[in-house]
Image 1 (cartoon, helix red, strand yellow):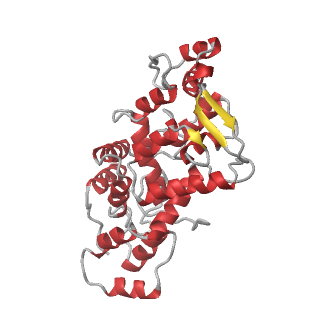
Image 2 (tube, helix red, strand yellow):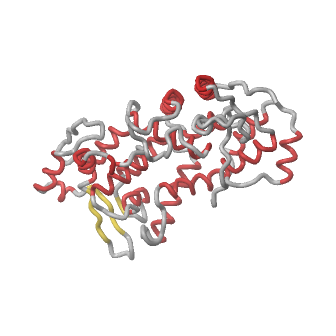
Image 3 (tube, rainbow, N blue to C red):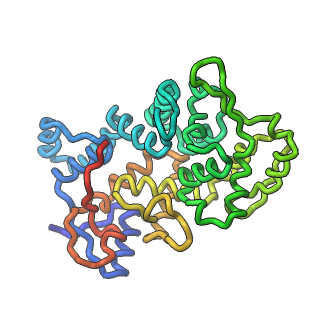
Length: 341
């Protein structure tokens, strides 16, 4: 029944915002509620009866943190978060994506290995953006094949939605076209193997007059013009810009998406609708989480732990107020439907 006490920087930033607005936070959740919540959010499964009994009988004051560490090491964590990434990256065999089974199996296997090994997030994205080769043997290239249209603007839109959390359809036409130019030199070449395709930076295509004209318009989404060397893969230049530690879109988007995955609502909501007129409910919290991701060398598990061990995540789902903004500012754990996964 005691008022929750901040356990770290997340809780301090959330509590400060709630205090400014005069919103009391919910009480702490019980051990039984936390156990069920953590199992579902981290592994997509419920604890067994024996696991529940052991946890509830454990008198260790640090047992919640230890449970989080154990869950993040389980195979179910790998399976569940692989599934989350497959949703985001459009891993699907049939219409409307048509990756086909061989490519889907290779792509899924690569994503699962990355999750299991906790591949640094910036390396994970760089491989997806810059890979070339067979869609059966270099599975990262399926990122481009999983977009319904192969037009540069459609590819740019997929990149922006997935890794920047923005919708280019809201941008001025020139800005979207400037980003699309980085994806205008991609070629798709069939092989003699059924449904195999080579995805690559096409030097022949890049040498044409049309390609040169397209690259003259290349500009990063922040308005900076691109300085591309002859024969340079424009995707590399874009990845270098996107993955820079000072790029405000990249780390902030991932931090916001992880928060959304674990708490059911983004600090910017929806998580793929980041724009000036849809500001974060707690800018300081989002900036801090993004900086933590960079400082931790893009270790996503570090961010998971920060959130899962926070008092904010461990609040009861029963609010103590009817204040209209209680959900926006995370005054209680959001009650939500269990996902199909």
